[in-house]
Amino acid sequence: TFNDFAGAITVAEDGTTAVTAEIQVASIDTKNADRDAHIKSADFFDAEQYPTATFTSTAVRTKGDDYVVEGDFTLRGVTRQVELALEFNGVNPGMGNGPVAGFEATTVLNRKDFGITIDMPLEGGGAVVGDKITITLEIEAALQA
Image (tube, one colour):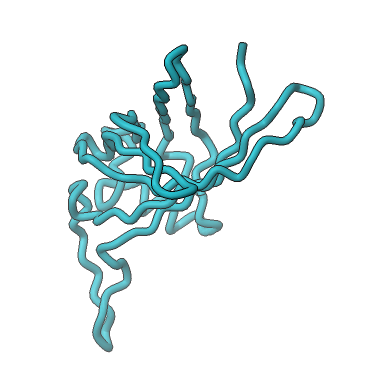
């Protein structure tokens, strides 16, 4: 889990949608302080040199009842095109601050594509850290005027 992040969904007059997000990678919280420190180190995120991960959409398209958000994701100074499968969960009235839209987005990244190449083999075979990482985002977006 990351505890420090921000994002925006902008819908233009013509309906064109743009999505941006920024994550402070040092805000990672795995519920294990030693592991968090290692993930922040140069072995993984190198949070001191690359404090933020960013996403900027390049296209949003429908896919059946759901959506695909394509965009540029940057981590450790490396930018790659990624696709997020996006499910719209509806809008509710919110808690007195106006309507809130809910979304869930998922994607799978290869950590090595972003320069995270550490290999930590297990004694009996396999590795401590796999190459593919599934990212799941639970998003609540409040309407801004």
